[in-house]
Image 1: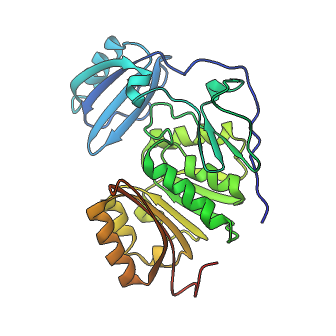
Image 2 (image 1 turned 30 degrees about the vertical axis):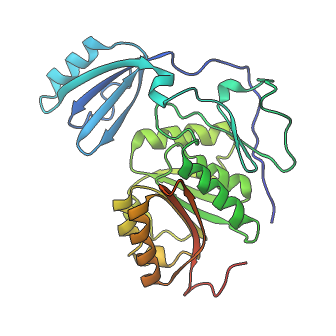
Length: 298
């Protein structure tokens, strides 16, 4: 199996993309093109009928005009914080197995804490923007470990990554050798962020960010399905024929009680768990295959 390390190109080091963030919290959906011409506009995160609108500087006049023009929008609150506060700390380089994940603004950093490049290391550039998912969450790290385990023994050409977020797992799969990876998310801001990270890693020929619902795209053919996703969505996915048609899968984002229910669903559908990862018995990640497609696991 051929492994690719990507075509990460060194660039001039630069600071994190934003010093301060101004975030407007609204009830209602902000029209997609309403704010795109403003130079300080970063993007809009939509969730369950609410919108979080991000700017790199205060935009009181623009938001007042928007709420006035769209009477169904209600401004609930306004927040101002540093970029690091929003991300829960400094976005810095780290290693997870063979993966060396680092933000693009640390390119050229020769800090001795990073150490020399390891044999077989796969370098990934990750700019999370304002999307959650720097790669340091336990479920992300365990998904990376699951991918390493799988790719050591199986040739995986096509991948479907549902709930891709920043795109880190999709790009990691491409770095391990997959030639076609669909990185799916229903949130437009997540898709934009994943698309930027795909470009940063020179993986446009292998990774395609897609805006869409996991439930609608789970039937897309693939050798591997990755789903680090909300439990309510995963529960529905596991009962579809699309999931049952996937030879291999990595499932994560599960708390202990949810993990038990997922194991029951897998047993009922012919799913076989090869390996489990757990962090403090709180977060669970599974690597496995479907019995009706594979009689064993290398």
